[in-house]
Length: 174
Image 1 (cartoon, rainbow, N blue to C red):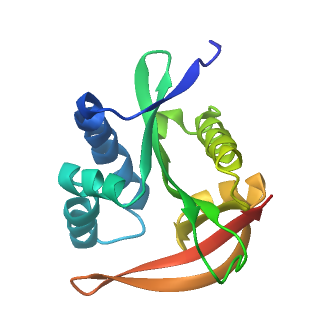
Image 2: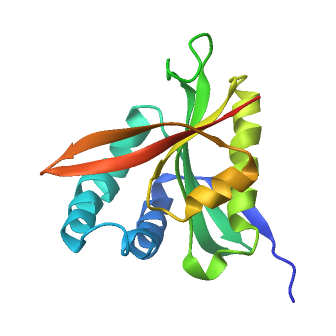
């Protein structure tokens, strides 16, 4: 079996179409058994269109693309210095806002590589830990638990058009 050659690169202007291709392949596949087709379509337009993704960078999200050798196979968005008073009233955290790898890449260490990168960035930012939201029906919850995250609380977020994001908020303190 060939050794994986993972690397992470911050997104540049020319990478937006690459990110969008990854989103279009990964996101619907991840949520097809959890969300309705209508909700997936709505969220793809509202949260995962290129204009929406670019706008997220204006509000603090840092996007990265994961490569296996030269092939883009996943993506990550983190928000350093994020505040969640329910988790840690005294310090800021790094929020893993998006972490996805292509279905064919799951189980290869790609997700762990991205998470290790997010942790390194959180430590560089001198944040007190890492947190994330995960849909309560998403099988990735077990990956986060295996990684050491604890389920801190649940919350439903109204995203418009009658849809909710029904999430666990998970936390890993340093």
